Every structure is written in C-alpha cells, then in structure tokens.
Image 1 (tube, rainbow, N blue to C red):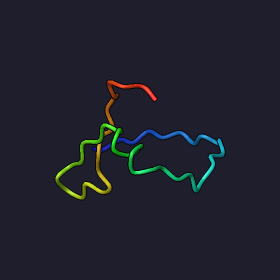
Image 2 (image 1 turned 90 degrees about the vertical axis):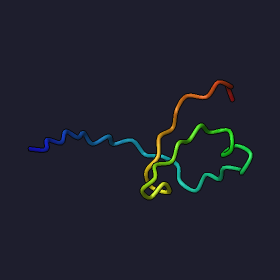
Image 3 (image 1 turned 180 degrees about the vertical axis):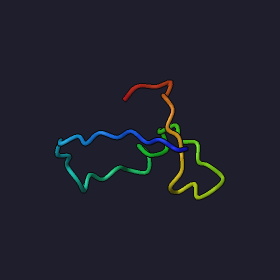
Image 4 (image 1 turned 45 degrees about the vertical axis):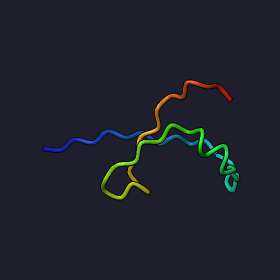
Length: 49
C-alpha cells in the first residue's frame, strides 16, 4: 500500500511577502492539467536573481 514519510520542521517563516507580476513571470512553473493552480512543478531557471 501507500507509505508516507514526513518530518516536521519547526522553522518560522515570514508571511505576507508580496511578489510582483514581473518576478512571478520569471519563475519556471509548469502547471498540471488537473487543478494547475494547486498542482505544479517549479524547475530551475536559466537566469539568476
């Protein structure tokens, strides 16, 4: 059957960070056919920030 392994990371991350449309367009996102707003892959970019 299905086995799932997980680990809790206790780090605290800042929320509410805004990303501009220009910055978002530079992210190499491949959206899946089924609910691409939730299911996607982010691949390395050829340019550096």
